[in-house]
Length: 416
View (cartoon, helix red, strand yellow):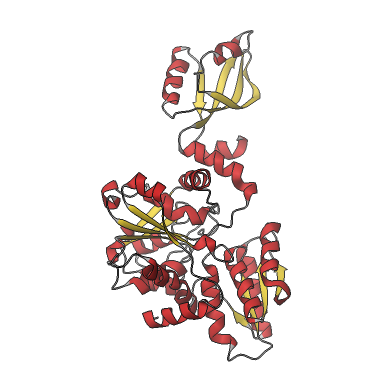
């Protein structure tokens, strides 16, 4: 991949959709004392950058392929939607394999983007089963498999994000930091390849969710590592194994350049961007913004920073869970198991311990733990995180038995 090849791909792409904005964000710039630019890939026609790689892959084949060639992909998310949009653009037949468990909303959007040119096949409960079925189908029909990230033409297509950034920055301005999310590595390997020689190597910052740090672990090991399990909350970046070609392009970076972002911290960013900026982001799309909080303040102060917002395909049915996670991460909501005496007035005595900003969000009687005591699950929201320290002090002074289970994943998953 050369810069000229990326720019040729970008020129061809203009026949499909206009450039996405590079916006100076005043809110974030004021917070960090820097010039924070957001590259808004959530504003492509399919609300993610994935359309770029799919377009570049197909454009190199369509002109030379027979009219009855069929393209195939396996995806339950943004890659499927970008693939479907591009198949309709070129007027070619595409087959999308999705797990049976795929939300109906994603199936419907993929069908809308592809129209009559797309066939959707649901197979298997997990992605690996779905992907295996797609591979078998490609071999049976002699079609083309369009991978989500591990292919030179996909990487070249995603590199057009960086080419646009360079064109859109004010004249004479070079980014001091480029922050980009990592899943399979298509976006990051493409952008860093194009920016090599334009932006210093140590100015590249990668971010991964804590539940799927495939690039970080691979850089630490010096070879591609397959994670034994991943947390799928950040579904757009929850990849157990970074692509082989992608890692080959990224292996010269230091493991310390990868920022690991807790899933709940991503939720804080999602709710803030929605409430303050009116911007709807999916978890992977919020990764690069959430990572800013984890960088040393002096690394941002006075600098020009480009953060890639990779996507905005968010299912609002997930909003209550996102809000819940955000409040827990911010220290504004906690869950306890209380051991209350079984006597008249015990509950009233407990309520009198709450402060003026403390609010009960969950109350559930669990069982009697002894003849004269009962266990209660209670969730408390408050206005400031420091209020909990004062509440704990009042609990101790009153001799109240309690256990904070907010960060106990096993108990929280079972009863919250």
